[in-house]
Length: 137
Image 1 (spheres, rainbow, N blue to C red):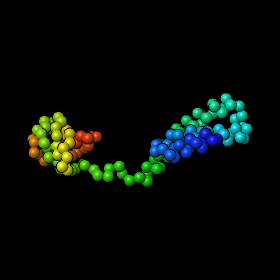
Image 2 (image 1 turned 180 degrees about the horizontal axis):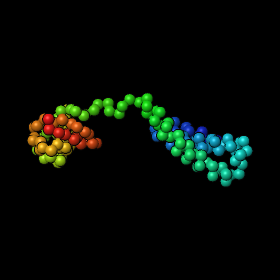
Image 3 (image 1 turned 90 degrees about the vertical axis):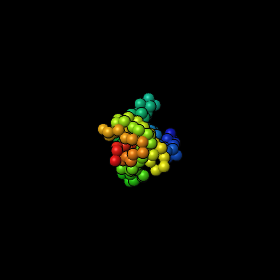
Image 4 (image 1 turned 30 degrees about the vertical axis):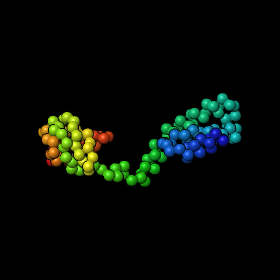
Protein backbone atom coordinates (compact mmCIF):
# COMPACT_ATOMS: atom_id res chain seq x y z
CA UNK A 1 0.00 0.00 0.00
CA UNK A 2 2.96 2.28 0.68
CA UNK A 3 4.16 1.62 -2.87
CA UNK A 4 0.74 2.66 -4.16
CA UNK A 5 0.85 5.96 -2.28
CA UNK A 6 4.40 6.62 -3.51
CA UNK A 7 3.39 5.92 -7.12
CA UNK A 8 0.35 8.19 -6.80
CA UNK A 9 2.60 10.95 -5.42
CA UNK A 10 5.00 10.50 -8.33
CA UNK A 11 2.10 10.92 -10.76
CA UNK A 12 1.05 14.14 -9.04
CA UNK A 13 4.62 15.47 -9.06
CA UNK A 14 5.28 14.83 -12.75
CA UNK A 15 3.58 16.19 -15.81
CA UNK A 16 2.38 13.19 -17.69
CA UNK A 17 -0.42 11.37 -19.29
CA UNK A 18 -1.75 9.38 -16.33
CA UNK A 19 0.34 6.22 -16.40
CA UNK A 20 1.96 5.83 -12.99
CA UNK A 21 -1.25 6.50 -11.07
CA UNK A 22 -2.78 3.24 -12.29
CA UNK A 23 0.16 1.24 -10.97
CA UNK A 24 -0.35 3.06 -7.68
CA UNK A 25 -4.01 2.09 -7.74
CA UNK A 26 -3.01 -1.51 -8.50
CA UNK A 27 -0.65 -1.57 -5.53
CA UNK A 28 -3.28 -0.12 -3.19
CA UNK A 29 -5.94 -2.58 -4.37
CA UNK A 30 -3.57 -5.53 -3.91
CA UNK A 31 -2.67 -4.19 -0.46
CA UNK A 32 -6.34 -3.99 0.48
CA UNK A 33 -6.96 -7.50 -0.86
CA UNK A 34 -4.07 -8.77 1.25
CA UNK A 35 -5.48 -7.00 4.33
CA UNK A 36 -8.87 -8.61 3.79
CA UNK A 37 -7.23 -11.98 3.32
CA UNK A 38 -8.09 -12.60 -0.32
CA UNK A 39 -4.49 -12.34 -1.57
CA UNK A 40 -2.39 -13.81 1.22
CA UNK A 41 0.48 -15.59 -0.59
CA UNK A 42 3.13 -13.29 -2.06
CA UNK A 43 2.96 -14.92 -5.47
CA UNK A 44 -0.73 -14.05 -5.77
CA UNK A 45 0.01 -10.43 -4.87
CA UNK A 46 2.78 -10.25 -7.49
CA UNK A 47 0.43 -11.79 -10.04
CA UNK A 48 -2.51 -9.50 -9.24
CA UNK A 49 -0.49 -6.28 -9.16
CA UNK A 50 0.30 -6.00 -12.89
CA UNK A 51 -3.07 -7.47 -13.89
CA UNK A 52 -5.02 -4.89 -11.88
CA UNK A 53 -2.70 -2.03 -12.87
CA UNK A 54 -2.85 -2.79 -16.59
CA UNK A 55 -6.60 -3.40 -16.51
CA UNK A 56 -7.15 -0.06 -14.76
CA UNK A 57 -4.83 1.64 -17.24
CA UNK A 58 -6.68 0.14 -20.18
CA UNK A 59 -10.18 0.83 -18.85
CA UNK A 60 -9.86 4.24 -17.22
CA UNK A 61 -7.01 6.22 -18.85
CA UNK A 62 -8.74 7.31 -22.07
CA UNK A 63 -12.03 8.32 -20.41
CA UNK A 64 -10.10 10.24 -17.75
CA UNK A 65 -7.99 12.07 -20.35
CA UNK A 66 -11.09 12.86 -22.42
CA UNK A 67 -12.85 14.28 -19.39
CA UNK A 68 -9.88 16.48 -18.48
CA UNK A 69 -9.30 17.67 -22.05
CA UNK A 70 -12.99 18.53 -22.41
CA UNK A 71 -12.45 21.44 -20.06
CA UNK A 72 -9.36 22.71 -21.88
CA UNK A 73 -9.61 25.30 -24.60
CA UNK A 74 -8.79 24.55 -28.23
CA UNK A 75 -5.15 23.83 -29.06
CA UNK A 76 -5.01 26.47 -31.76
CA UNK A 77 -4.59 29.69 -29.82
CA UNK A 78 -3.31 31.60 -32.86
CA UNK A 79 -4.19 29.81 -36.08
CA UNK A 80 -2.38 30.62 -39.30
CA UNK A 81 -5.11 29.16 -41.49
CA UNK A 82 -6.61 31.55 -44.04
CA UNK A 83 -3.84 34.10 -43.41
CA UNK A 84 -2.34 35.94 -46.38
CA UNK A 85 1.37 35.47 -47.07
CA UNK A 86 3.82 36.53 -49.77
CA UNK A 87 5.83 34.03 -51.81
CA UNK A 88 9.57 34.64 -51.48
CA UNK A 89 10.51 32.32 -54.33
CA UNK A 90 9.02 30.94 -57.51
CA UNK A 91 7.25 27.74 -56.48
CA UNK A 92 5.95 25.30 -59.13
CA UNK A 93 2.71 23.41 -58.45
CA UNK A 94 3.19 20.71 -55.84
CA UNK A 95 6.74 21.86 -54.98
CA UNK A 96 8.36 23.51 -51.97
CA UNK A 97 9.54 27.09 -51.69
CA UNK A 98 9.59 29.93 -49.16
CA UNK A 99 6.88 32.36 -48.08
CA UNK A 100 6.75 35.30 -45.71
CA UNK A 101 4.02 35.41 -43.11
CA UNK A 102 3.83 37.98 -40.32
CA UNK A 103 7.40 39.09 -40.98
CA UNK A 104 8.85 35.57 -40.78
CA UNK A 105 10.12 33.37 -43.61
CA UNK A 106 8.52 29.91 -43.67
CA UNK A 107 8.99 26.78 -45.72
CA UNK A 108 5.95 26.57 -47.98
CA UNK A 109 4.42 23.96 -50.26
CA UNK A 110 2.36 25.02 -53.24
CA UNK A 111 -0.73 22.80 -53.09
CA UNK A 112 -2.36 24.65 -55.98
CA UNK A 113 -2.42 23.41 -59.58
CA UNK A 114 -0.77 26.62 -60.86
CA UNK A 115 2.76 27.88 -60.13
CA UNK A 116 3.27 30.73 -57.68
CA UNK A 117 5.64 33.56 -58.60
CA UNK A 118 7.94 35.32 -56.14
CA UNK A 119 6.13 38.31 -54.61
CA UNK A 120 2.67 36.87 -55.28
CA UNK A 121 0.09 36.93 -52.50
CA UNK A 122 -1.01 33.51 -51.28
CA UNK A 123 -3.47 32.03 -48.80
CA UNK A 124 -2.45 29.53 -46.09
CA UNK A 125 -4.71 26.47 -46.36
CA UNK A 126 -2.94 24.14 -43.91
CA UNK A 127 0.01 24.01 -41.53
CA UNK A 128 2.14 20.86 -41.40
CA UNK A 129 4.59 21.37 -38.54
CA UNK A 130 6.75 24.30 -39.69
CA UNK A 131 5.66 24.14 -43.32
CA UNK A 132 2.77 26.13 -44.72
CA UNK A 133 0.54 24.70 -47.44
CA UNK A 134 -0.33 27.66 -49.66
CA UNK A 135 -2.51 28.45 -52.69
CA UNK A 136 -2.38 31.43 -55.03
CA UNK A 137 -4.88 34.10 -54.08
